[in-house]
Length: 136
Image (cartoon, rainbow, N blue to C red):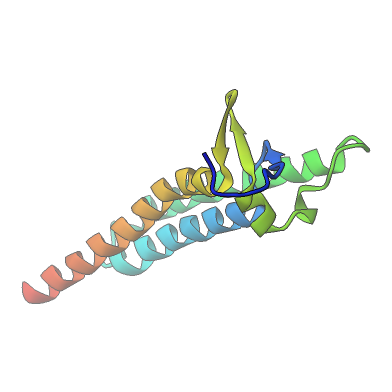
């Protein structure tokens, strides 16, 4: 039961807000930057880091290009997802396989694994640098 006196009609969305995708791209960039900054200390690590960077680049650029194609060929009656504010999207509901999640929960479910990997790699890199400087 809600605490609202008047029941509001919540908006239902079936795609993420572009701001959520921007946060995901930022976390992927954080991951790549921390890998290059904190682990590029040996001469034989450059090629694996380059390959990981290429894979991450493809993982970001390919969905972006597909979204550009999709937005160009959108039906005339469909709404533009960029016209919706992040606040409205966040307070609405997000459809997932016939079920509904709150918008904030859907964004957290998408961004939490990316944040854990990015911040975890940063923490591991800092510990690695501390241990390496103590071993000298």
